[in-house]
Every structure is written in structure tokens, then in C-alpha cells.
Amino acid sequence: MMTIEGERVVLADLRGKVVLLNFWATDCSVCLKEMPAMAQLYRELSPRGLDAVFVAMPHDRPDHVLAYARRAQLPFKVALDVQGTVVRAFGDIRATPTTLIVDKRGDIVRTILGEPDFVQLRRFIVGKLDEAA
Image (tube, rainbow, N blue to C red):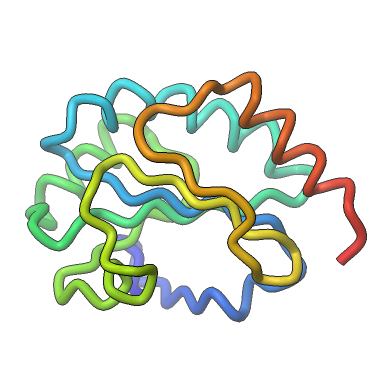
């Protein structure tokens, strides 16, 4: 997948890291509501090894995604999925937001539909960060 900054992201290259993978859209009010907390969580845990990729849904206009990401100063990778290949690769994701937590081995260990409980999410991610690869 390609980020809005032109960086190619291959999830296999992130093995060894805990990855927060979020499917979202600029027309999703819950997505926009949770975004500041997601950004804060990432800023807090990225020094400990958390990586994050936020994948904009195929229907989302790239110019809207780019404008929102810049305006909100999103600190993590934001990817476009214009062809829907990433959405299909993860089981044809339809609901936004959908958040997946991928452990250091590359396994999806948690799927969250809708806005997460951030206390529980943080605790879960810290536990995964503390695990051996």
C-alpha cells in the first residue's frame, strides 16, 4: 500500500513490531472523533515500538484524506486504498472504523469495530509490546 507521503508500506516488513492497523474514512464521524485519541496513543507508544498505518477506505477521496491528515497533523502513516486491495486482503472490511492489532509475529490478535475503549486498548497494546518477538 502507498502512504499519502509516497512511502510504500509492506506489512511483512513490519514484522517484529506491534502494528495498529485502522480502516477509516473522512466521512465517518466516529473515525474523526477517535482520531485525536489514536494520535495520542501512537505518540505515547511509538517510542516503545508501536507502529501504525491508517488506511483510508476506497470510497474516500484522496484529496480529502490528504487535507484531513495535514490539518489534524496525524503522526502515523496514512495510506490510500483506492483500488480496495488492502480492504480485501483483510477480509473485505466494510465498517469504519475497524481497528486491527497485529502482534510482533504478524498475527492479528484483536479486531475492534467502532470506537475502542482506549484504556483497554492501551493496556492490550502495552502487553503485546512487552512480549518477545
